[in-house]
Length: 548
Image (tube, rainbow, N blue to C red; front, side):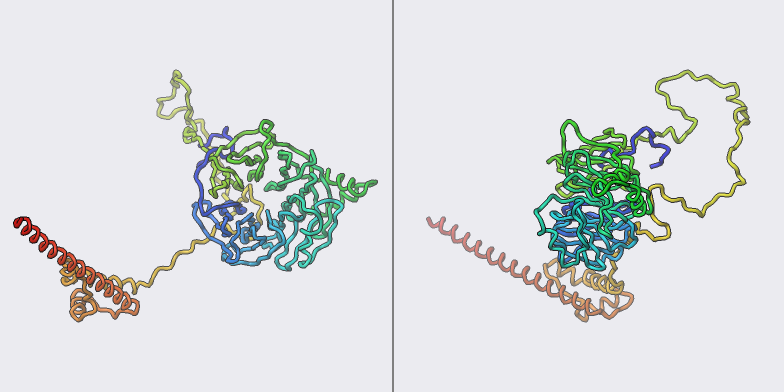
């Protein structure tokens, strides 16, 4: 779509369902960094990757030991790795380009969400949020897990692999906590059941700051915008809140330590709240004041200008879109199917939503084309207007044309080598990014074998004896006889020695032809016997009638 012919007054958000994707029963989706690939986790334990440009399946990843539903999928920063969490308590790390499994581990609880560290090019470190346990850092290389604190008094030490079982047995069960990495992957933001946001240094397992959420309701979802400037939380009080991130993009840990040193006269929780007020500040709140509905899978648009949330009501497939100012700009109504997951395309105004039936709906913008943009001097009229002729309109060289002077500097050199950076991309150009998966063509069969099979079929169909046998219901294999070989030599330009595969095919055809010939003979004999019996019975009946 050409940008000049698009109406600039239209909002840059999707409006209608363009099409849908189907592959089994899909449970969750996630775009890669560029939005060229879409990963989808299925209910049968498989993970399929769609090429979003062609909407075709590019690769399918499947673990033989996993038959449980996939709960989440997460891409690495440059798209070379994919993390898959399943309902059988497993975490699997895949190499996307080769389709090979890099590592696999099993937790004590079912991971509802799992995210790879966005600050590493080839991450083996992930953040998992189990069903009834504290969030944990999982290191695939070392094979250990580290529990993160979910409240200020709790300061657990780094746990060894054999201590993982303690996370579910030490203390009463509690609602699952939400957690996510910041943009650089230095810190973890944890939302707990007390309505608090903890800023945690996962390397030293220390809570550096605390931000209380208005209302004190439990936090269900927490996610950063693509540029890292805003943080979104979804709470049990049916409100989506947007916080502005006041920390710098780099050297976040040193900035937090300086903030803590500058706070004097306070200690403990009050000091953490003071530091937290300098890290996050409440920006906007979104809620439906009429229905008071819960929200599912809220997130930002690719450029961070829009906020989207799905309705959690049963039997409704509604998507609400707000701008950052807090105004509700659009409600997308889909089919009468519950919504379980959604994702906004990183670059384009496209939303993909997953229904309860396992279909992935693609919402796109309904563009209104402005064809007058092709002719800049053309003016669209709402009604007829009287045209006033210019004095020089029919002159050979009009005066208006003489005055025009080109504003283009023809002597200026044009740079055709420098590649401009994408406005929505924060990738390092020195690192090769996986944007598309190469096609995997199916290998063709050997040409010589195909030629041999064609010659055999031609000999069978071209022989006169086979035509007569076909008319009489008999099929004979003349290729195996000397007559068939002589006919093949006269008809073919050259004779080839058939391979073992061709000989086997000839034998199978000969068996099938003999079997079909036998069945035809038996049918003809049976029909002849019935006719004879019928004629005899008919004569006897006539004689009996004449006698009586």
